[in-house]
Image (cartoon, rainbow, N blue to C red; front, side):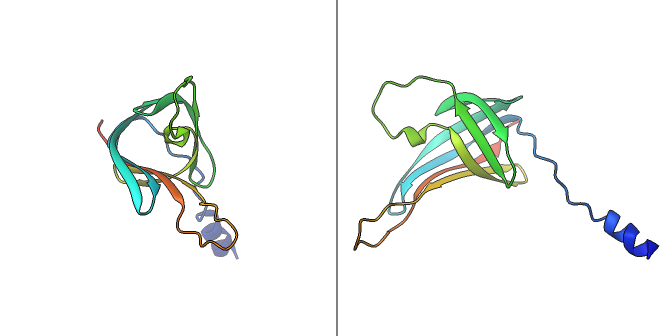
Length: 128
């Protein structure tokens, strides 16, 4: 019985959240599946702040591999505001690579077939 308890105690789930720090650069992809655009992008994490090619502000690491960005800037132009690094993204860390993904379901009108979701994704590698 003691061996069983000792074994279970050693199987604690790792609930530590990753620390995002440093500069990551790579590609930002956005749009629908058959009409996606890709541009160069860079994000610098420092403490709980970030600056990027597409916004700056603060971020919080949440549960379930979610990171929430709060952009602090004021924008006056007409463009796809989802391209600004803000709101919730799921994240994957693979070695020195960071993948941030946000998807929005494409709403189909009655009788239409949903084609694909809108995708906003960063595929980055740590520079320092």
